[in-house]
Length: 439
Ligand SMILES: Cc1cc2nc3c(=O)[nH]c(=O)nc-3n(C[C@H](O)[C@H](O)[C@H](O)COP(=O)(O)OP(=O)(O)OC[C@H]3O[C@@H](n4cnc5c(N)ncnc54)[C@H](O)[C@@H]3O)c2cc1C
Image (tube, rainbow, N blue to C red):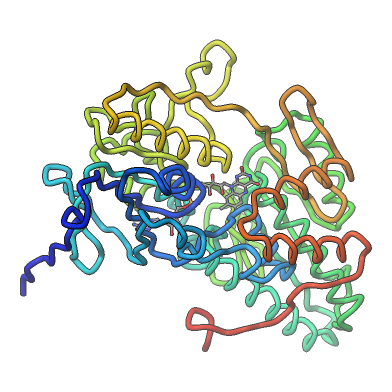
């Protein structure tokens, strides 16, 4: 039965100022709203989660190093003080650009004068059979909690089966980029702690972590020396690095390689890539950039639009220096790009509303980092080159603490990492079944 959509007031009755709707409260959307807070404009921030999640630390939640609450912060708490900002906990399913409204999953509509799409990306399974059903992605807090339960459950099961000499425990991580490398290193430390401190009866020689990538080296976005270092550290942590190999099928408890090898696995962690296909970006006409990202003009408006903007991972923002410096044609999907593009977008909207013109976005490269475990990380920093080892790890810690939202979160994470630094095991090694994982 067709239902009449409920049209909510666009707040115009409350004020004459323009209404900016921001969809997504991740790094990009939060950055837009931060700049628009307490400015002469009405803002509605819509997110299907009621929290802002710090995705770069999800792997630590998944490997029982941090609690979910350490890496997430309620969106209302962040913007509650700003009188011109309303927060709406809802999913957006469509955009009607002809009528300037966004349509929520419950069919309610919200009108906008300017719309910012900051809905990020999701895991890409590259149509590998079985991957969507059986592999475990790491892109949301729910993914991380589910993975933590699975890993800890597998260790408990292995403890029960420890007397059986024939039992081996394999974990497979698919994807040798930063997420895969970080997860494999942290998983190795979790297993080591479980054996050394929690008395799990596991023979370390029978627990294998296999990190698989089709590329010929790890961390391809970093210089080769960083790849070599990461591989060395991972080998030291008993992670088998399997390069130049592709996974062609995922089963419930196994993977199959293109050469036919089948490997049993207690968990397959999917860190192979991301896409905007299947997100809100897909419903916009311009979602024809790489991996379904939305092609935007230099000022971050959609092609052919003056009041719809796209920022962060959802946007394909052309790197104007790409051809001259043999870089990728579009800026990478990284937190600093999301934050800077969000900030730029907010400034442009304020400029347009005050009768001014827009300017193109230029990304200021902040470098890239990946940690491989306690006291081991690689960082590629502009002007400083590659930093490795403890120094890289300290740089990684400092930067992540700086960007975490909320003083209490920063303090908790800082204490937790200090504990780790001195090799005092901490971390919530708790199996907390929820709707997704409960039998
Ligand atoms: C595991 C992992 C590790 C990473 N590590 C690093 C790192 O070390 N360094 C780095 O620079 N980058 C890292 N990244 C990338 C970085 O996190 C992203 O570039 C950044 O989060 C992009 O910000 P965003 O705001 O565009 O999207 P997101 O942070 O994904 O936020 C999108 C928001 O939109 C909401 N949303 C989506 N669809 C809808 C909808 N239809 N309706 C309502 N709300 C919606 C979501 O709930 C979410 O809150 C990592 C990413 C992952 C997944």
